[in-house]
Image (cartoon, rainbow, N blue to C red):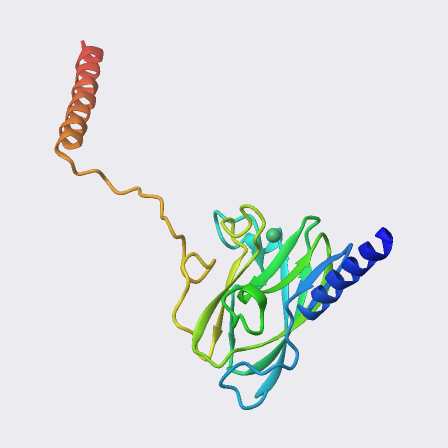
Length: 209
Ligand SMILES: [Cu+2]
């Protein structure tokens, strides 16, 4: 009796996962896909595009200060378009490609999620909303986004740039190397300059004797 109950609960949970659009295995997972449900405001699926996103350390090389990256950090799509995403992980560690802020009636928590536990390839589909917005896409593993695994997806022209997208909007917090023009710093700098000058002069004259 107990095992029947457990089996029933398990099958219920599995069917809930299936209805939320989830595929998973020892390779990774694909969550909250949308192949054919129209976003509000769309009359039809206006078109279809296939894109490939590669993730890995190699893509960080052009951007100083980053460790991880995507093969592309910006995407532009028209509204109401079906996007078939192929996601390739070229590292031996876990990476994700997660899009945030999508309509919650189509994607639970507004999220479309591709994940690979190591080297490999997977694919998933979503339909761009009827909007002019810039969406965040990133890898949610600790420090992966902060170290470069961040991209922006502009739908219908977008709504501007997100901060700290590699190659697009630079660092969020720039290191500050500006000269401190405070009174104390100026006095100290002039004192050190004079000290340096006079010690040179002293050495010069002393050597002459
Ligand atoms: Cu990652």
